[in-house]
Length: 219
Image 1 (cartoon, rainbow, N blue to C red):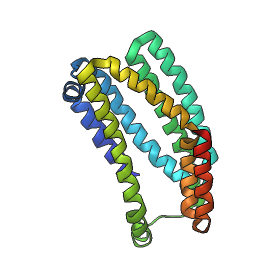
Image 2 (cartoon, one colour):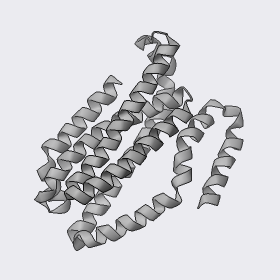
Image 3 (spheres, rainbow, N blue to C red):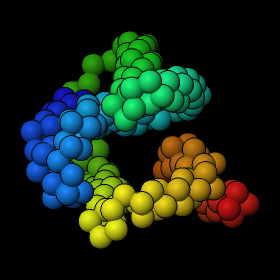
């Protein structure tokens, strides 16, 4: 958790400090630097929330993940709409941040309970000796694949803005929202299916086929 907090803090502070340069280079709009500074807070909480969600998935408490995510997303939607209506983009971003902050509080409470119930001290030496090979073989490829997604989307939107202003990016965002809507069910099942694929190795083919069937039917 310390590593995740440090990484998220460094990344968020980098976005905050270089917000003007990012706004000019990516979108050719220095006025967006203020909104980028607000978004740096989102990056920090999103990083920690991902760590907490992974911890709850390790405890197989998928019900708590679903409840926390649903409740925070519902509040986030309301605050984003209200904030956008009264305070424009900055208000919408503030509502967006509050959703992530609420999810942080809920996940933190849930993971603290789980650790307290386990009542077992964790030694760093034991983690390195037993799980380092697994983290290297599975965690690193999964992390690298995730790292490629966000920069590609960022570069695509920045390119559209530089070439055709914000109108083309708006059309791209609309089509992307439809993609997310179509993939809503598969995306929601990923945090549940993936740990199952890892835990029940003897049922790998069965779980994989079930996941493929859900993706095809929802698409």
